[in-house]
Length: 191
Image 1: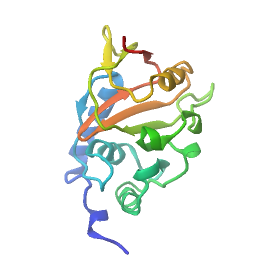
Image 2: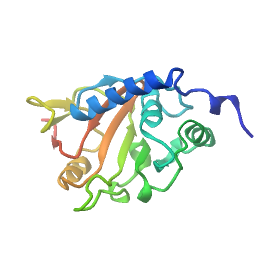
Image 3: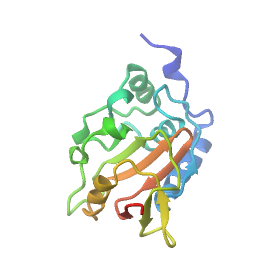
Image 4: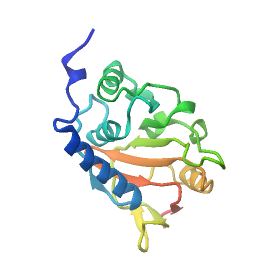
């Protein structure tokens, strides 16, 4: 059975909105810790506007998506399939995974790339209750001196960055806000 909601919530002006969203997403990844606005998509609950916009922008029929925990609903699956054609998959085969930190589970469940192909790793879209420039201290490529970002599990993210050039990349979303954390970023605990 189809519903009107699976057909709505995509980009109303796809070429323009997708271009703006892609630029915002890539700028966030190039400037770790910087919080940006990301709008355009209106996904079904529980996905945030920013997470839905990322999925609309970065996914296509060749992109495996893992919907973790509460993000895995019939409405979200239908919406994702209709607007992107991206197949739902398990964590081990995901190009992208979306959900809360708790729902996403252990980072060892996701691909981290190989020595020959470090780019063949998963990108996790982590839905957060809040996203602020406080907490962990970030340094590395794309950061002038240091940046600060509220992170859900600093030790797990530090372990991921220690795998560089392997490891997962992250987008953190909250409402219409997004920040990114590439695997190349050095993370220090607040304090």
